[in-house]
Length: 62
Image 1 (cartoon, rainbow, N blue to C red):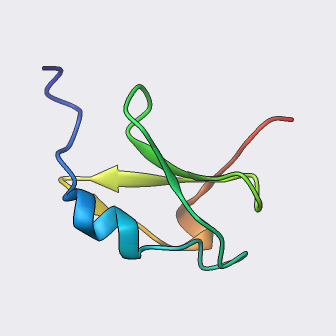
Image 2: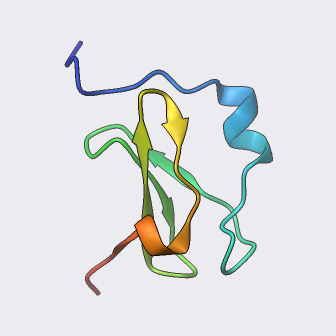
Image 3: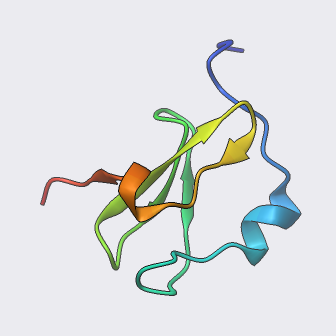
């Protein structure tokens, strides 16, 4: 397993929603991010902790 990838508790992923759109998030293992399709944002996961700040999110290209 790639060391940069974090392990995130699947139960936690079921509870988290996008702080902007309040929509469901999808875990993307390849980028180690939680993606909000509704808000077109990707939230990083650092050391196994999702950073759920809009200011820290990466804008997704259309």
